[in-house]
Picture (cartoon, rainbow, N blue to C red):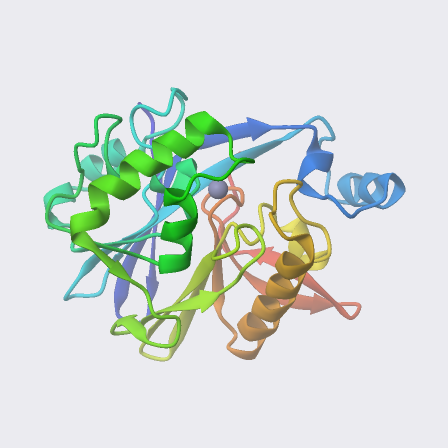
Length: 282
Ligand SMILES: [Zn+2]
């Protein structure tokens, strides 16, 4: 199994972006609801993007602060039914990181491609020594069955959330979760979706998670995925995080951006544009 990993640093923190696998979805227009066919067509042409679909990476982050070994989201797990996903565990092994040494697993939201790795389908917990953390509103949303959720993925998420429950801390948006790690409220994709800000020794990383699926949204924050629960809120969240990242001159990591999903925002003709730190191999 080939795994894609990208080591990098944020101040004194040693980090690794790990691709849990690629998810091909299409047509491309489903990621950019809000764009007129003409606008989308010219943007796709400008950036040489296909119209029949995009290949989304699912990249989890491993962060070693020197005190803690943190994972931000844990991918789909081994039994999501998608063979090309769940590579996180092979990547950790390859990097000589034992799942038993992970001290914290921070979860951005309850979608299966982010929480699936917490346990198997029987509810056996992975990361046996870790504390798990997520926002209570997100936890409650998934545990209270909702009529418009796809039942298979809802079931998969509920098994994971039940498994982590005895080891779960709820995240307070205004507090540091760990030294140098805080959550940023970025609702819209789900109503309690959060992003993370990681700070060490004067450097900042902002993990935007599923606030954007593709770098094109840096330039067009008004375009959002068809399945964002609240489109207007997700637009406001994107605009706010772009402002924050610019003010802080932060490195950005996009969970679904072309791997490794690391880059910065730059200004061109009064617009924000994405500048990848490492060019994707995809
Ligand atoms: Zn996702």
